[in-house]
Image (cartoon, rainbow, N blue to C red; front, side):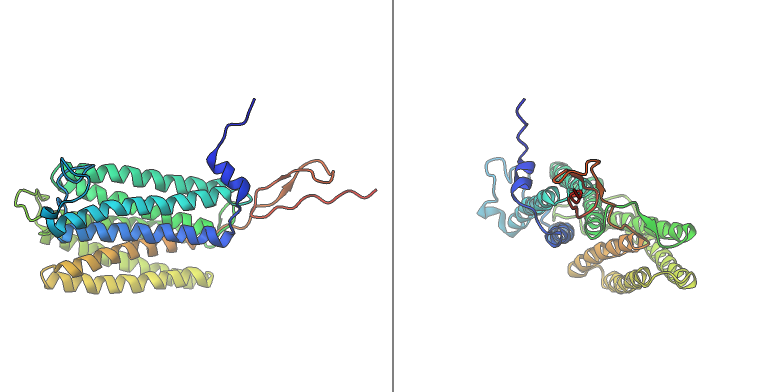
Length: 337
């Protein structure tokens, strides 16, 4: 029976990327995930959410914006086009991971997870337009983008590790403290989306755009409360890591998160007392991405994965196949005669 032609396998048969290339491709997916979040925020902050009033085309008669739609149509349509760029970057990561020798199925699965998140979020983006910027759909659109960023960061980390089972670098109670930190950071971001959904930046100049029926100042106070919780947990984790004499890398990652939180807090306070100017709100959205990336890096730094062991085939004949589990594989040596 003839083999099924798999395009990814055909590429893998002819091209084996370096581990460095795969790491670069993984980092590119992280960068693009951040860009998608920031440009999506720019669409809302420039009142361009309905710049293209329908989906998947820009208008009922045109795929692209017309001159009469002005700058808002261009901004909205440009953000839609970035989805194709993101798909291309994720596609490169998938292909490179699949072609890497030895094959690392975990990396390929993370690439495909990103692809389907992009596709799902594109549909949610269309529903956002068709529902006239329903604030709950807009919030889910942002949270799905944050999910994409999460998978991208994990893929970037996994591209720099081996495939052995993870080994904790600290005791379980310390790991549990990092879980609480990640959960609190996630809650902080979710509450931030509620602030956006209830605030004055509706995404379009039309007065018909719905908002979440909450006092945005009260929700902002809850958001600030969670900022203090996350800062406190970050400080507690740093002192705990020092007390247990953890490796230097986890402590450094916690310090990086602490710095990002301080900068994000300063931007948040300035934008609040300046009556949320659009530019500062956009910078704050970028900062939220950095906070989430920092929280994930703290969590991932508390364990390590070595290269998986190489298990040779039972045969000791020259040229016998090798069961490749780690990053490198060797042929078994020829038996002496």
